[in-house]
Length: 177
Image (tube, rainbow, N blue to C red):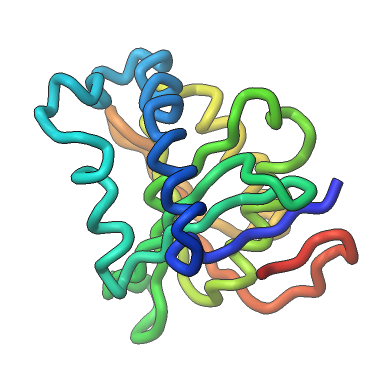
């Protein structure tokens, strides 16, 4: 399985795919009983309106996650000014989604590795505490990526992981577009 990531701002079909898939993402979040992700009809905004900032804000990078060249998920990385170790790049993974049929194949872990390698610097990854599957996934992925060198903070609502990424040699079957 070849895994790659691509900046979704480059191709209109990538943006269209994310817009079509966004409802599935919200359904997944709602299934976690988090209570913070209502149906699109409740917000009064359409998908295009909700996602527009991803494609116009220079601090935000929407990515399509590809499995064997076909879209299988998406992620959104936001550059912030909050850094735990002085000045420099700090990134937040604000959205991450893998379609159900592509889960449990290592795609999410491989995509996360590509994303962390591509955006070198301090990182913050936050999950809603009630979404236990996401918390477990990110603990495994971040612990593996960092060799256990990360910090985790929990509140009554979320779990936040912070760590530093840097250039690493990725396995041969993985690449970035």
